Image 1 (cartoon, rainbow, N blue to C red):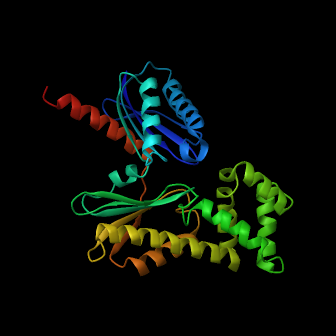
Image 2: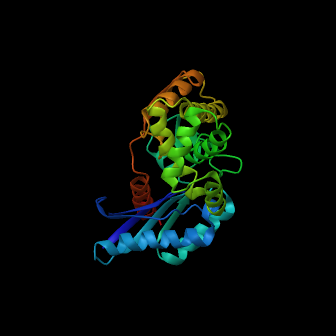
Image 3: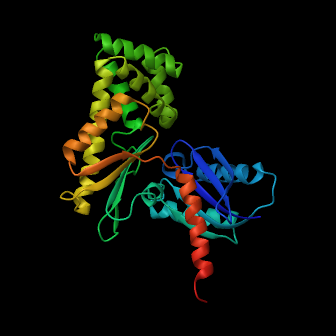
Length: 308
């Protein structure tokens, strides 16, 4: 069976969707994280192979992969993109390949014309296009100097700030919640685990902070309010670069932290409305790997229909 693969790879997981030549989904799978910036190139290769193999083997059919579109976090860096492209070329040597950043997938699903997508998950970023269809982005380059307002940022902020206020009742409550969730008994154990693999610790703390904020913990609420302000500032910088400030434009929210905390969702919307009053805010309910698969199918059809 001729098929078309769509991949969405990030700092938490990798998703694969397989379409047949009529555009119907015939297989899908989820695998490990594949952001080379966070986990290294060899581990990213292994995650991509595992996820693709699982999808292609799941239906017990013989697939002939015609085209692949891979939206992969970390490929905003040319050296990462080149290595991912070369790896996929070895896996699918006879397929049409399209490697792009994972951020571009949800933007593809936005209405035509000026638009912004705010991505808030393990990391954070904003991507958008202006009236001339020029695409720009802000953020999404890893936690070293980016990813502000992300789950990673919130978790790291919570660890540092909570331990700094040992006499605060809300901090004591948060400490117990964090220790219980991570299976630790003290901050030394948290530090040790974070030093070994920060991505396995800090983003995992987000649901703890979200639950505490909903329960009225003011310290947890302050973390989420701070993160919301950072995400709105990120979006504002991009809107200014795209010159979108004076006209209505759609702004879609997507990512692992979106829709998981009513308090955080409200805080983000409030900050966005304050900083970008002309933005038309919505939650973008799309599956990026499905979008990638549709792009792969479209790329193949366009090439097949092109004059020779």
